Amino acid sequence: NAGVTQTPKFRILKIGQSMTLQCAQDMNHNYMYWYRQDPGMGLKLIYYSVGAGITDKGEVPNGYNVSRSTTEDFPLRLELAAPSQTSVYFCASSYGLLGGLITDTQYFGPGTRLTVL
Amino acid sequence: GENVEQHPSTLSVQEGDSAVIKCTYSDSASNYFPWYKQELGKRPQLIIDIRSNVGEKKDQRIAVTLNKTAKHFSLHITETQPEDSAVYFCAANGGKLIFGQGTELSVKP
Image (cartoon, rainbow over all chains, first blue to last red; front, side, top):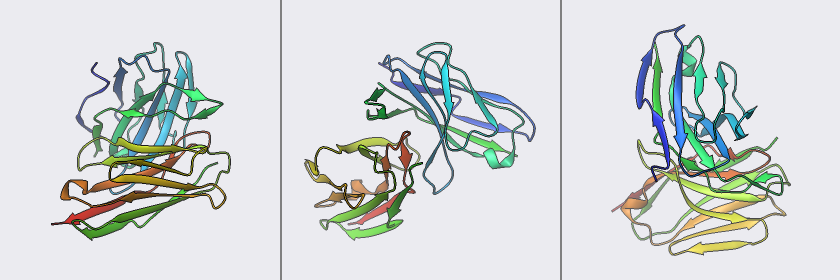
């Protein structure tokens, strides 16, 4: 299995441009997540999805959009890029919930390093 | 929502010493507490986790303890080695998995 894959690995955007970060997993996980990690900081949840067609906001959703049309794919869309969105973006997946709370191991992709100038 | 505080932010130890990283959480409903290790430029990877029905879990040189009453949990690394040098993150699942700010561990040979 490839696990969780992300493309591209690196990207430089100009202010106001848009782009889509791709994420795919081949582990048949129900749950998928997008995090951002600013330099020297922890992981902040942007959006997550509990299954195809279902998405929800995390801690820092402003400026981003997601969709989940299949179990395998969970793209993250940046509209009108701003310097504050310069960060490393990690996608992750897990099997799902137990008893209404997230309990399963999250597997992370290799990350996308985004710079907005 | 859940809030996770992690201390210390940096930790330097001599090879062979023990290292302890502590986290506190706010949501008493949280019942899953994983620890991730992130090497420079790499993705976070799970090293150990604990669920609320146990107070301690060990895996070779790594152990995690949980005190639900006090709402804190700790990572213990014994006999540290230079390859343990990395950033360590704790997390708690108050509805969504919330991460601590990270601890940069440096193990000096």
